[in-house]
Length: 314
Image 1 (cartoon, rainbow, N blue to C red):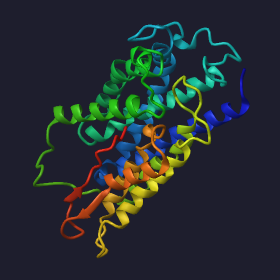
Image 2: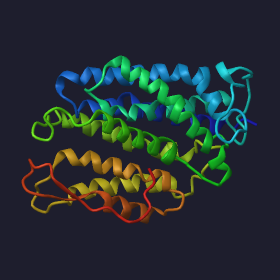
Image 3: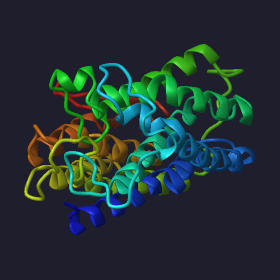
Image 4: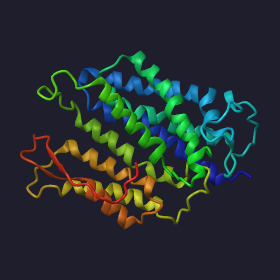
């Protein structure tokens, strides 16, 4: 049976996740590159959103959420075949069409996160080719393993906000891509600083603040998270703690503006582990992983980062 409140909440969460790609991620990366490459970053995000949307409807959703195989789904729902009006996604109270759209937004933002590993360094056609292949080789199988009832889900693995499906896959892939591309020309003697820190701040704010609604409605087939659980409260508390960590890093007022977005995003990444952590613990963890001290003058880029030994998913 379809629940109107659950459906409306999931649709709003879909809009917010898409907002985290367009324009949030675009602003975040565009501010870090040279001024001449700003438009290329935005067009990469826009093109990926369109291409991944089509691939998701053609085969991505079916391979991730159809069938009961431990490693990969099947093409039973390819091109959204057999999708009837009023169909409800198993284990939820939302229409299948809404669930498909919600999952599509995660499929869009995950390869877009990897843009930062090769930004300014590869051709536009290579971006599209890599992202399309990566969707089916990495993202779709891992999604099936955890959210589609695959072998990790059968072992009891839970992922309420993409700590494994989104963050781990994108992070590891970005490291591999950067390693394969090698250092930039002239690095580390010739480094181009971010041309627009304000754009990075805007992007980081949009990336971190819309997260609580996306946590409330789990992208897995597990029961929805209650509004009284720690998740909706822990995420904004962690983000706020990360921002405060930036403010108090130096008592003499020598703040480094380029590190404030890092603190915000570090705080937002508490959301995959909100379930086992209470709000005070999430705030302490976010404060611990924020940059504690800027070494030297405000123009220096060297930072002492104190990381907590606690679990920090994503």
